[in-house]
Image 1 (cartoon, rainbow, N blue to C red):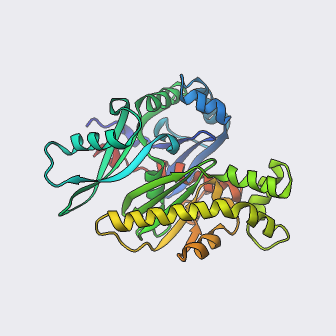
Image 2 (cartoon, rainbow, N blue to C red; image 1 turned 90 degrees about the horizontal axis):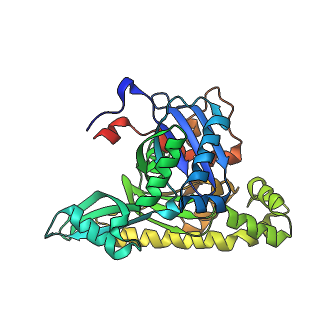
Image 3 (cartoon, rainbow, N blue to C red; image 1 turned 45 degrees about the vertical axis):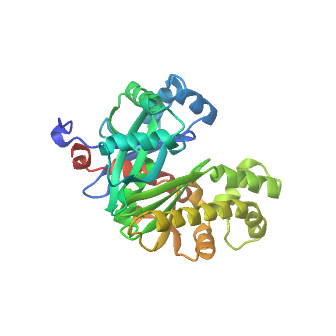
Length: 350
């Protein structure tokens, strides 16, 4: 394959989701951030843009790159992730006596479970194991039109897309290096409107999602305490489940949603244990995403799951050097984009 990494030009991460865009450049040798930025977007306009011509998305990427960067984005060569809620991912076992190629079997499998015609999908897979029952694979797919729209929007902002990657693959990359990610781990990624759950065992083995996110917590707190959304958000990130006069009411507001996430974690753990060959005992739960800024959330999951749970904090290893740092409650939103920025060029060129 032709190398596009002449002169060792750095790689930049770009994360796209319906609520916000993030960008980051990292010195992978020193694990220091050279530049970063985040831009909240209008979710309705973003959804419409992703379904049409990508014009709004392109405008917002340009705004992010030109007006919202702290430090220096020292390259236009980008590894990009697309919204997890718009992609499809699952594990499958292919028959031992395949009649055709693995690729053909993957397409047949995708045709059965993905509600989009396979000729309208970009499909990729990774072999995660083999045994007497067959070959185990992890399949990822996204609508080709969506991928094309995101790439063209980024290109309109002067960026060159090298790879489109799932957000969980990016998260796994950074957790393996900073959060004992070599252990069998449940990743809980609480985004704005969705929570993605995955099993990391060397590589991502199983994924799923549920329609609960940080905005769900905020709305419930606002209703329970009869306050405006802005005040509810403040209470969420500053008080949360920590001891205090509002703890009981906040607990009442968010616990049903946290219990739904807990149920999702238990479901995916059962699936991994029962369906993935040579499954190992899960050792930890790592919580990421903007919704992880709820104080006390790690302790809540530890109690409910009877499994050590904590909010990821890779910032001891991946540091901002002399750059002004994001506020504590905003740091979790940069974990996925940091993982994108830390791609080894050899991963792309192999």
